[in-house]
Length: 170
Image 1 (cartoon, rainbow, N blue to C red):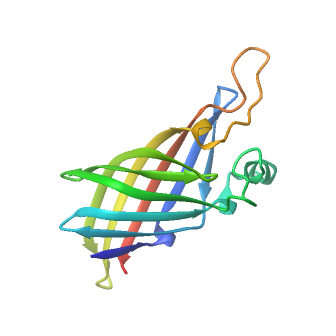
Image 2: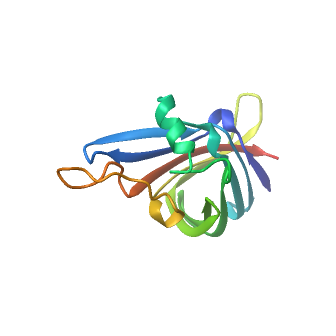
């Protein structure tokens, strides 16, 4: 069965430590994706993320993240994910795939759980997934940083990704 991600009921979030003491969170507001599954096993997942749609609640910071210092959206407007393996034990899942950012493709593993299928009040079938991972941003060329006088750096090396999706039949 083929499913499409419903962006109205889905969210892709990221968070990083700032100054080593606080967390900055953001979302990617525009994305699309498809899931192919048989008997609850995903055989294919593709997701395209419009990097210009990032939103941290601060326009100056968002502009910096879109710049060549970070995502360089003029040259690399999208990030993509393609599933390579999927393991399921009950509702718990591990999804491994290839994440491409700034033209660099690296493997990532996301863990979480899935829900459904379930029918909404209008009889439409839905499925969901909640997945998380941490990625070392430097592996994707996201190397900008500032050393702090007291030690450490302005932006943490690790970025936490949190994905909550709901999908419906294509």
